[in-house]
Amino acid sequence: MKIIHTCMQNTIKVKEDKYMNNKRPNIILIMSDDLGYEVINANGGTSYETPRLNNLAETGIRFENAHAQPLCTPTRIQLMTGKYNFRNYIGFGLMDPNEKTFGHIMSDNGYKTLISGKWQLYSYNPPDEMPEERNKGQKIEDAGFDEFCVWHAHQTEEKGSRYKNPIVYQNGEYLSKEITEGNYGEDIFSDYILDFMERNLDDPFFVYFPMTLTHRPLEPTPDSQEFAVFDPPSNKTLGGRTWEQLEGWDDDSKYYKDMVEYHDKTIGKIVDKLDSLGIRENTLILYLGDNGSPIEVSSFMGDLEIPGGKGKTIDTGTHVPLICNWKSKIPASLVSTNLVDTTDFLPTIFEATGIKFPENYIIDGKSFYPQLLGEDGDPRDWIFFHFDAGGRNKRPIQRFLRNHSWKLYEDGRMFDMKSDLNEKNAYLPENDSDESKENRNILEPIFGELK
Image 1 (cartoon, rainbow, N blue to C red):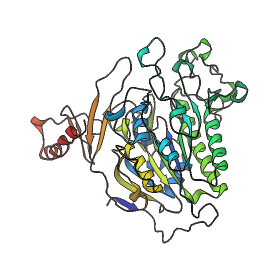
Image 2: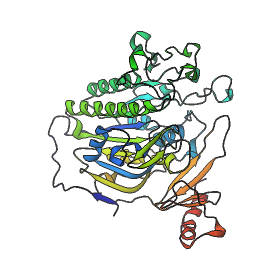
Image 3: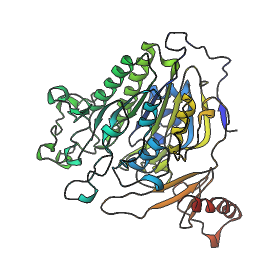
Image 4: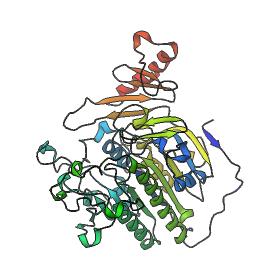
């Protein structure tokens, strides 16, 4: 059974208001940064409190087999374009400037569009490190959105804080210190989203919220006792200090709990605004993580300890939460075991909104819209990873495929995902079991089709 109905629901009452009739659905796509599957209570996590995401799952659908790339940039490129990384990935922290994003496509189809949160896709490397990679990405102004409010719009050495006293680039100008001093990045980004929604009630809107939480540095949030006395660098050059010089504030894993819970609270703020505006029933909310949790952090699912797997190709590096909610369409308390990857969001959004694929546009993703409605649809048999970690100490590109039970690397290693998620016992062609050989014969030819 692909779709599990965990409660009985006879009908879904659709709220009748002036924004529901004759209007295409609004889309809000939220992506947390460095937060794996094991973090969310609804998925069985017990280390943190995530009541607002739990509620979205209880009144919508959660997916048990959603996967992203092991690092943020590869995931973001797939999410925004619907294409596998071998087609259009040019380097870490870079988006091909010639690539169309969902911002362009949604705007071209009459949607009011906003990105608010993390960009980091124009220029990643500091001047003394791989300078040939600087300024090769896509400017936020060219990414297709009507409005933007982002952190890390330009150079890495200018990015400053993403949290307290953040550096924020909004619609072509940096916010002044008078606005950002003492404030918190995620509050600025989410408040802009609330204002944008209120200003666009008469038009369908598409909001992309790539959250800065819960990425390093691990530091206090406004709900932490220490927030008032925490003084991060606030100017573009970090005031001559590095994060490592902040005397223990950076990467203190005790703050990961505060960050997870503030990220949940922030999502709740957006949901509450949808309710107060009377547009919740006509809004599809899609929430996912961009990769596994930080390797500095361990979380629990009951008695089971789960170390963070960010940057790793094992299950904890790619297995992410996926929760979708649409009060007038999605039955409550659905659970899907279908495979999903980040190329699938663009075709899902197209199907939900009735948008047609642009002419000659290559798309690798597969819509999971039928699953949102409680139907099987045409689910994936496998998902594909083309992982280029990049950076100074460049690792070889790793390509691998997985289905529900088995995972195959292009170099021939194969692992049983039912019993070996940490990939300790490789099957090679010379020692295949009957089951591994059968799955190898299914998966291996696919690599040749994806080049």
